[in-house]
Length: 448
Image 1 (spheres, rainbow, N blue to C red):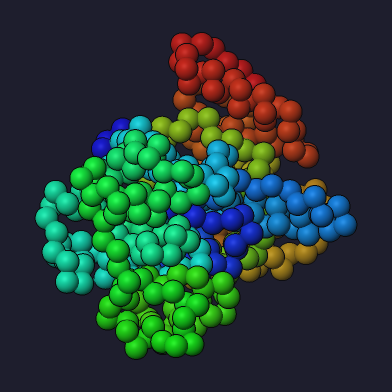
Image 2 (image 1 turned 30 degrees about the vertical axis):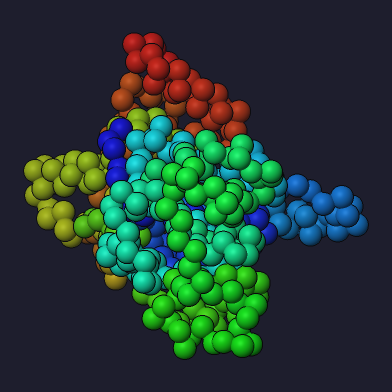
């Protein structure tokens, strides 16, 4: 694995239930409005994660079990939709900051290094652009600091011990120092503030460079006295915002520069799996991508070394060399197994085009097929026989390129499709076990 050196790491620590706050932070800090346009390449300067506190079921939920189920269901959906949350099983409210520090240090095992870590909770707003500018200029308000001091920097507001739990900027060398000196303090609910006060009394022992910033870090509980928008040039963080409506209002009024952490590649491909071809795939997903690769839920990837891009290259050669057709005129690639009388619509590639939009809309209109076992497959097969659709379709008649039935599997095949009626979950789970064994022992023979 290659080393990744980051200018900043952002960690928002969050209880499981803070769905609205995480949504606002994604949109207004990182310009991620939904999960439809996924990250193709993460910005190498910033790595962000939501660190989720261990969730403990409330004993009072016996009378509100539906509420508890709703929380867990919504959280599971968010986990599936976004690859930006990590639930830390260790830790509690009494040593949560220590748990975060240990997790950050563990990133070196993934070959991820950083210059500074920015820690904030989901009841806070931060100005990422201002923080980056300040660190580059080596000057916080009237305090100048050196490169060496920057490595051991601990920047926040420490007069209120609660606030340093909500926001802090920490240099690459400071976290290990704080953990090694934690025995100097009485309790671990807030390592940063406790060490700040300890070193105030014992300055000769201090290996860190603390900057107690009571200008740039604003406590929202004092907003009736001061409007932070009037001080936006100095503001780097606003903490203690417990209303989603107030947070949204502040994001809108402050209009901090959003930092795009997701960079799309030149060719963008969406991979979708489901048990049924839904029309919202067309309306919500396909317009954002060049191609959409559809997989039924009873299909599994057997060879992860094959990429969709390499498949498209292979299909281009097949079409242009053997069929004398311009591949740019092909909008749908679907398998027609050699011994089947129809296509297998459980796996296909479809291009983002006006043709595809019209075709998928027509598929949805063929309601007569949805009352039979053919479902959308029958509708697609009949429609591609029509002249207005036929010329744009490539039928892959090879049983091994991207749609292999279990009995036809040979080593190296891309996808195995367990396509009989229903979803044979036991067979699929068994296949996962076999494929994992095969990855560890490529010389073994497997069959399905």
